[in-house]
Image 1: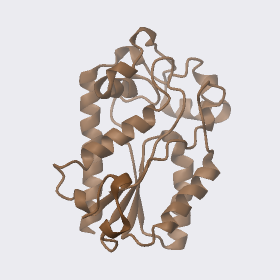
Image 2: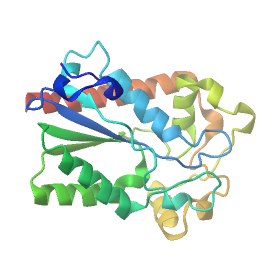
Image 3: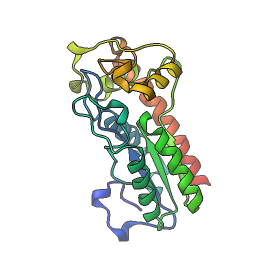
Image 4: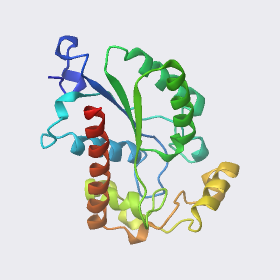
Length: 231
């Protein structure tokens, strides 16, 4: 049975013909004045850990790879602390990693950062061309969600690790039509839309809502992973 802790796994532990590799993508970027730079990474790691915990009967079919925590965050340029690989470097890196996992049954890219969307489209095109078995899952949206460091992510962090949330610095940021906000960010970056780095309203966040969102994410990922095993 594969060891879910990659640091403890040996090659001989892996049933290569049945193993599905999980490759998590996080981010390392500003999340307003109140959330840590690693917010996307912390959230996606928590979602995966909960989805494939001991209560998931198919957990032995998966091998968890280390999270890529510096990904495509160019839209956050200028905010202190942000690091970005850029879209093309991320694309090339993930395709190479998937190519190197030829010993596995498949690889599942689990994405926790919306800024990776362009890279994921390029990754999918390349993997399809090379006939590499893969799937991609990203955090699902829901009614009332917002995009960045607002109600959704702040609620999640209040539930997962409230000590990392600077409660005295909670603010509202840019709000409005999501399509318009995305277009504006593509043109001028996050700073052109929200000088405080928040897309949404962090002041309305609650731990209870964070649990609801985590449960939604975990259920969605479990459903995706279950479907992969049954294919």
